Length: 459
Image (cartoon, rainbow, N blue to C red; front, side, top):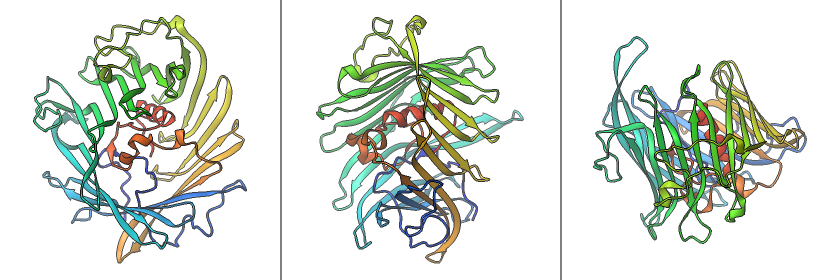
């Protein structure tokens, strides 16, 4: 079976805690609980295993995608299972996930149905010019809503909804603010996470855009909010303001950001970074450098009403600029190397001139990630490793393409860096829009921001 190596529906499968996946008593090549593949170092510590099964999702057997996923915990036993239902949309040949059923496993391996997710989409029909100048009709299905239901009572517990950017003032006719006549499929305005017990918003993100001379749009501001510890409302978590190259070889590529973030509830943990991006001859970002930025007294607009939509960076008319005399010493730097196919093969993280950690990546002939190893302590200490193996296998009398992922950890995970925010983790297993960062930690958000700037997504 030929694996589908492309993202068919432009979703980012959310960071899965312990309840997303699939079990098979598989003994073929890959990581085995009794005989895991040895790392180069001696202190290998098995952490978890995920198995994803892909099968045909269309009657003609032309497209294969994930239909079942299983996650095993540290003891090697099945922890959770998720099963996807794919349905053909009203446009023939287009298939989307419409439902995901989630099961938790008992100690004896029996599976208990605990919750399920439903997804709603919007059909976007548009035209574009191909390389020969011909007009081509195309269709995309955009994720509008994700809903989480409890299996025991079919009660809606959590949901999110996406409002996309519009070219004109919206005339809402889809129930959540999208004008279906002027929707621009490439850009979102907001993504809101809510719980139904008290109609409270648990996380939110907003974006505004700069229109270039060709009519395209680039992110101008992005803002992220999470539920505060007192559970009384939202608080600003991170925000970006971006500037672009309007006169270079790579027109309208990012030049630099102003990054504003909070390390905790205390205002004393607030900080600003000026982030500069440098590109190589292929247009790939090879350096992301963060400089301490002195925002005290700088020409940053004060927060305006409504706070939720504005944060600290003014969205309109966005008439301020970086004060370069307030840029301080270089703090953190991410250096990146690529292979000839454009895959990231090495990330190096530096802090004030010292190498802090690096991560290496290995791929197969399909540019699928097969090995990821991270070292800290200046690159001398192995911290974690992920190995991914692919194979085709007949199971339950049917043929599947199997992706088997093993994680090894060499330390106790820091909750602040490894898990989604507690207030929104109930949604972290739901399929989410590709640009959605709601509920992610600071390091995850920064890395995904970098990947998006480079048009490179890694799961």
